[in-house]
Length: 192
Image (cartoon, rainbow, N blue to C red; front, side):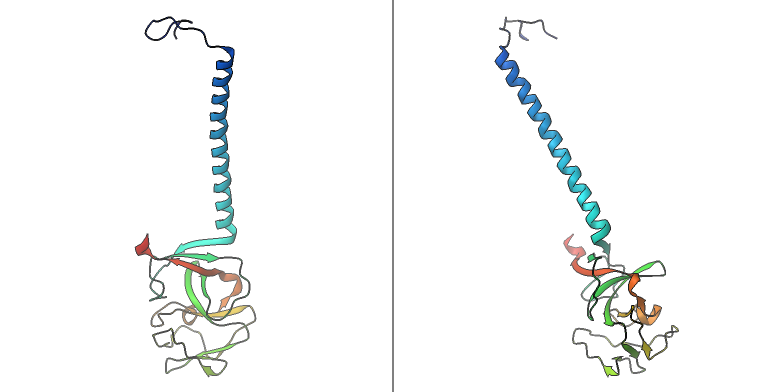
């Protein structure tokens, strides 16, 4: 520490005036207030993101190519957890036996579903023509018997890549409570 009245080079200096001391102290306090304000806003932002992604939204990578060509393995899926009215065609994330799957709703509660020997899908006795699905819907030997009438709290989920995909033909109808959310956007892994 330098003695009062001397500069670093040893030249005599004049002591700061009270106005200069006040100005320096205000500047230090303003710098501290800016830092505290920044960290409090950062903490608020982090808390909001935690709340949003813990209760409102979910994020997960697509586990496989079962939804190909629209969703590929590794694509990042953002899904909305608070949807309660499911419609046919919604892409959803479901949890079955501890595993997460992605699929498209093809039938809802009260509907009768049948996957035929000719690899076609029938809902309520009518053959479903899906213009955006490029694969047939083969029957699995999984214990699901057709025709299957869904309970009011169940949905039937099929993947877009129908041959070999793990969907309701594999694990049966999905209870609404096992639906984690509706996929609202997909971030391609090639874009990350």
